[in-house]
Image (cartoon, rainbow, N blue to C red; front, top):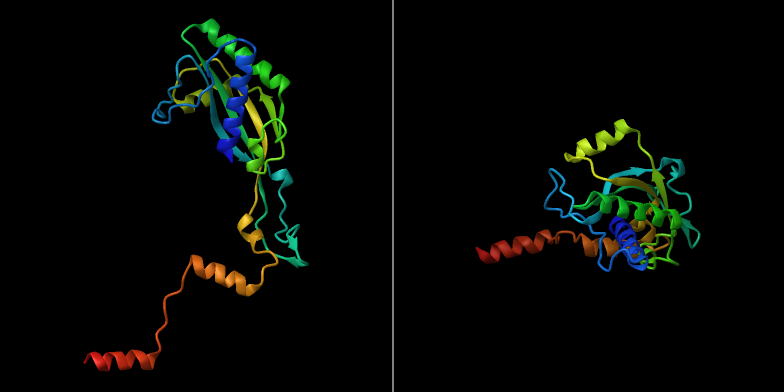
Length: 211
């Protein structure tokens, strides 16, 4: 799910940069995961980089039986987890003015495109994401220093956005809602087969025959 969200933002931003005539190439690319310590951002690219995943507990439902009803049966399920992402867009170019230029385009893009849904981003429907809201975050200078210190690299022109909300639902429990107990036992048995039980008399006869 998280990978789909970042891919959607990356692809949409690339599409925007091409439409405004800034470039004909894909400038927005993910980081090379082989270079993580210290983090090495790709030259002449804008890199979306996930720096934090946190849970939004304001909307967390503590009732394990709430809302999980099918065929008149309530089934226990773990409450959904709603998370938000902090994504840092880093603009690294050999020419400093180019880095600032592309950073400005990133800000313009999200100023106009704050909401993403299956209507404008069909990939979200595959993950059952109804809506994503993107919000610009302004960190105090001290907190910015902490972020770059944790990345173990020098500061680069960048902008931070919060993306919310992603819902993780306990689909495994919901799958069995209203299902007859016998079918559930069969499904579990197929996934976790029990060891074969041998009749004691038959086992004794086998031992005597072998003797």
